[in-house]
Length: 218
Image (cartoon, rainbow, N blue to C red; front, top):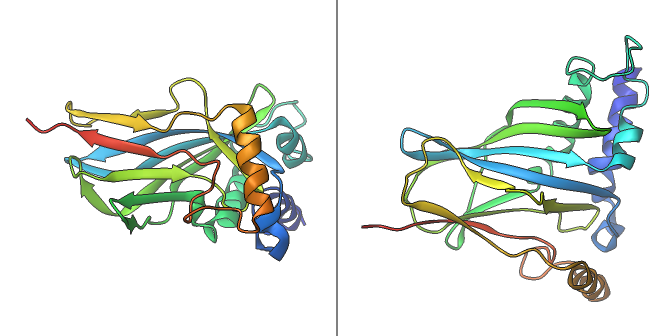
């Protein structure tokens, strides 16, 4: 019973509505502030460690009935099943994470180390998304974006240092990220996209921001 209920909640708020034909013309219904750390190991980029903090309205809906011990808090164990449902629900949308090497797309493996935390009245989904094949750390042209082309979920990077190079990153590498749009510019871009019936431009959401890793070779 609880599994069915959780599935319904997560699908309604994160994934299922995206499958509807009208979703490409949808306005955002869920807002997510993203933090990402580029993971390194053995001289390679190995993936992205992500934190998605959901808006308070989604949080209030998602946590209903999950305080099993009635202590007024939601610990990791109580949120375990919801975390799994969320990860399963976004799988069909490539986890809304798109990486590329120059003009070619890069594939990700199954996510790992996923869990939900509840703090300050909002839920945050933590997970690691490994690259299917590790990439040499200083390879030029590595970039990624996190977005929903349908606009059902409005992703944006958190305001304070949202993207970081992880431990093991080469000292000569740095991040370059698209500047955040103003609220007026974002609203206008969204209105334009919704009116042109495509909802995207060149396969990229008009609201997305691309992060690039640039390494200076001596």
